[in-house]
Image 1 (cartoon, helix red, strand yellow):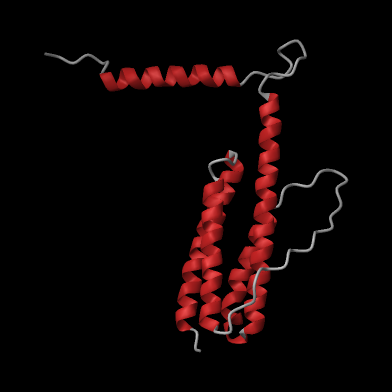
Image 2: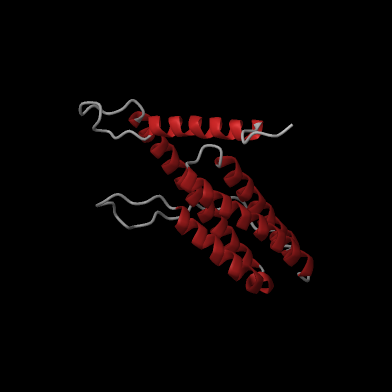
Length: 180
């Protein structure tokens, strides 16, 4: 028996492609097509923009807290400062990247970061381990935020979460190498 050119897999792929095309065509209309009326989904866009801005602002606050924690550990334990400098610099860059875009006319003045909670441990190993735990929490927080973030912000959050997980690993290794 000879096979025809159409297989089940091919038929399902074609059907899926047609369905996807129909869905994308329905979502791609312009705002002017309904007689000047705004489409029903424009309110959802505004809500999404507000939610994204809130996610970004929280991420920036968390980064500021973590930066302050890095500073406190480096100040309290100068022997760890050299190992913390590149990680702290990366956290600062993450905070800048996550900052919500400013609207026209909005002042450039940055708000002072909130004071970090609690004192730094007197033991340098414990202090660096606490930083590692804070980085793990940051990775977890950004990973959870992926569920509600838009595509562009989700990619950024995923990158920052991966970097925070790497920082946690590096800080754990630094804690092991730190002399008491």
